[in-house]
Length: 134
Image 1: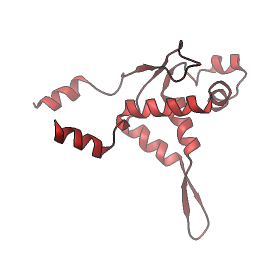
Image 2: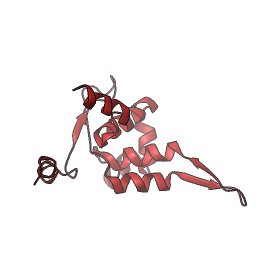
Image 3: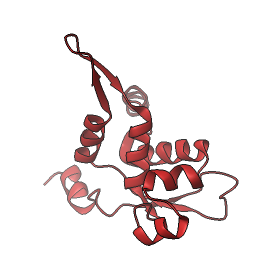
Image 4: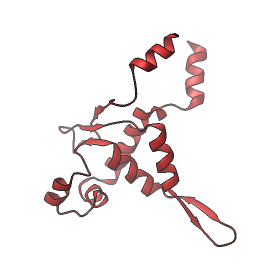
C-alpha cells in the first residue's frame, strides 16, 4: 500500500471540522464549519445554474444560491437548519436566518473558509509551483 493510500484511508473528509472567526463583530464566537465533499459540490453547482430562454437556452450561475447552500449546509455550529433555532429567531427558513443575523461580508467569509477547508484554498497553478519549488 502506498503512503498516499494509507493517508487517505486514515483521513477521510467525513468528520473534519474547523472553528473560524469570520469578523471582528463575532471574534469571541468562533463558528464551526465542515468541508464540502465532491458529491455536495456537484449538487450545489447543478442547483445554482439557472436556465432561461426557449430556443437558445442561456445558463447563468446564481452566486447567491450557491453561497446560501454552502453556508447553510456546512456551518455545523450554530446549526442554521435547526427548527428550534429558527423558531427562537422568528425565522421561517435557514436563508432568512442567514440574512437576518449575518452581515454580507460575514457570509462571504464563511463561504471562503468553507471553500478553503474543502480544498479550494489554492489554485492548481499555485500548488504546482509550490511542489515544483520544494
